[in-house]
Amino acid sequence: MRAGVAVLTLLCLAAWSPAATAKPFLPADDAQVLERLRTSAADPQARELRRLRAELAQNPGNLDLAVKLARRDIEQGRAEADPRFYGYAQAALGPWWNAPEPPPSVLILRATLRQSVHDFDGALADLDAVLRVQPSHPQAWLTRALIAQVRGDYPEARRSCAPLGRLSTRLVAATCRAGAASLNGEAARSFDFLRASLEAEPDADPQLRIWVLTVLAEMADRLGKVSEAETYFRQAMALGLRDSYLLGAYADSLLDQGRATEVVALLKDEIRADGLLLRLTLAEHVLHAPSLLEHVEALRARFEASRRRGDAVHKREEARFVLHLLGQPREALEFAKTNWAVQRESWDARLVLESALAAHDRSAAQPVVDWLTASKLEDVHLAQLVDALERGAREAKR
Image (cartoon, rainbow, N blue to C red):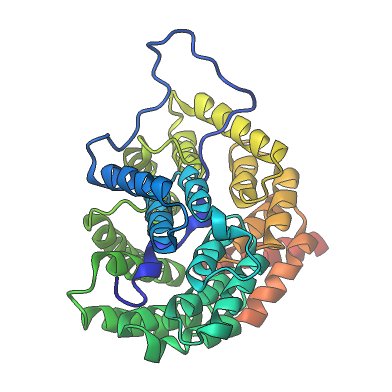
């Protein structure tokens, strides 16, 4: 793959988890369908994965082969919203995983997998180790920038994007810079810049294009440009590449517009991934759908199982579930605050503000309000919540 493009298939791994239940389920008979797989044995990607695994089993010390298989597993896991493939990727890298000084190619993939479970410090340590020996490694710089962005460290994100101007393609560099700047006081200018950058490269690789279009759609959404966000979401969907992050982001936009019926149509077959099932259930809640109770209970069981495993990845989703589907703002606020301590994207801030507003606890929202002011993050949804909290505080003083 071109420099910079390879990393695009590794983005957004932290968003989804496989279905889990609080206790093992035993089917009543052999004919009962437990899960319908999206791919078949004849699928070209499935065939390639089988071939690579067979080759690696015959030659487990082949680093190039292991890295190729791990990359394919990560791509498949993201496309299918199935983190089991991330476990397969780690297994492929097993001989080098705990080595004192793993090869840079392994460190890059280990950083990606650590990022997927919110081990951001571990991921950054791996990336820094790569850059000490290969300071011109574009994927290391891009992944570093994306982690800094997730953590709300926009100056660091911008610093990590800077080398990409000479190390990667113009569009990759532009998307990195614009994405960070759009969250750091330059939303409108960044949107116009990235839109022009994409228009200048109509033949961009589809995997790169879907990333850029999704970033543009989210920028437009934060700016309140609803129709433009819709245009970019639809263009990204029209590329025909499975992308769980795109599905979730588009569903969020539709939910904000009260278009619950469209969310159900979009996600009706996406119940394996917790994040997508959550959005489907939120839409069903609006529509009073017959499957609402079943999906609420499924989510409840999955989050309970996640807590029992000590999994802290899904606090954002659980906060949203508890707030909007269980109607428990105090409990939701605790989940949202725990999540905020780890990652600071717009939705992380939004859930703290929404929960604090519902719980009538403006003091709990103050750290987020202060951070929004300091970071200069522009988001119409967050601005409306801050205004509502301030109105509530004024009314409480009367």
